[in-house]
Image (cartoon, rainbow, N blue to C red; front, side, top):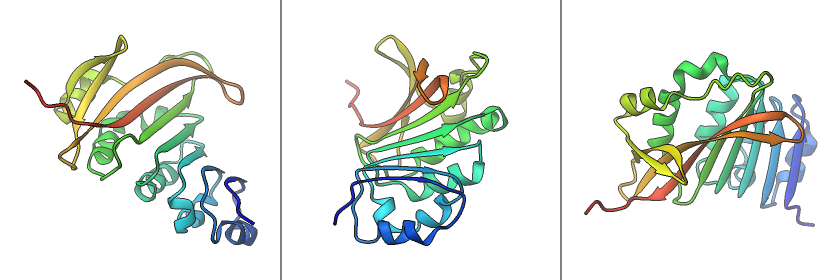
Length: 184
């Protein structure tokens, strides 16, 4: 029997998850909790098409997921709090730009904003830190960063005030790998 969708809500390394994962190719995968550390060692998991990982601002889980999940078309990382990691955002974006991700892939940082603080990323600082080019995408400020792959660039922009049924008001920092356009 083939399974295409898997949702794991556990901090425990339950053996059942490993039996379910073996031999399957998942389209949709959702992992909540520290079980992500063991599950992301399985190729069936790392080659999933659409992955969502919810963390409680754990730098370790997020870093591990970004390192392991480089072949996915869509990676969504949900945070309950981002204030502790806000200052290091340009370094994280730079690390992502050094990875060899497929053109068309998307990484979303989804951050819950309980009090509508609107503590959005400072694009001016990220632009300076990464020597990126500023641009507009559908009237939204964005930056473009050349990637390690010469044919690709990482486009970073913000989708504010989204509403998630589970988490409430949130903002999304979207990173898309696009084909590099030749300047005329």
